[in-house]
Length: 326
Image (cartoon, rainbow, N blue to C red; front, side):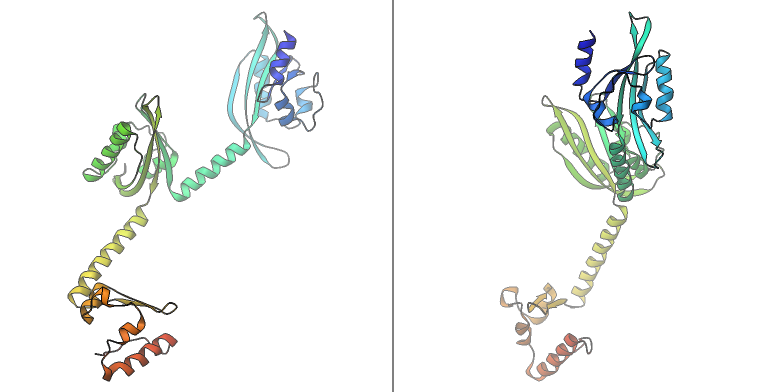
């Protein structure tokens, strides 16, 4: 029995050890030796506290509870070591009883999850800065999970638990809610992902533009889960819409006032005109070669020299181009 136990523990893919009631090692996995000892020496009969020099106080307390017959599971404990570094551990401690009665020792599962926790902290910070949250819909039990940032965008409390109907009803009534409903239904029916920009109305009544992305996870040809991201794009979207509105107004104004807009690239001698410029000069796009000389050829002989001098002065920085010519 002891040989079988030793064999099973030795090749376990995680750090696991068995200790007696005095916390001396009886057996352990190779992974335990790799993770929690400074060398590869045999640690049989050595005390746990002698092998692992710095142990979180909570872990020590849980070991005592284990020796008192309690099963302990800790999914994540933050501990500051003597050298000032911060480490995260998780563990499981299970009493081993002889004949189901007398305590024979403990089986301990111990894992250093510092790297994982740091990655999660960085991810959460990135989500917070970029205002990008995550979400998940479990289609089996019709439940929804929102990350902290997703809840913040919706302006709900951190303990808020949404359901599918409530999640969709945050979208502004009308085309926005209709659009997300259509996208979700299509995703469930056909497995088609989506990436769209819509308005939600937060719990505090504020309208916010968001970028919602989602995709379906299938199992045996059936949708079982929908996962996605949710980003606050309100500031960028409003600037974009304002720019489009100004551009449209400018377009209308220049058309009515017969004002043309042009741009001249000095490096490649490329002259770009808008549609109004072609109307003013009375030429079609296929008649215009798009180079400076093409514009020069349209100038009235009596005004050409003055217009060219004004152009050259603008190029060398003497004065802005502001001329009247035929």
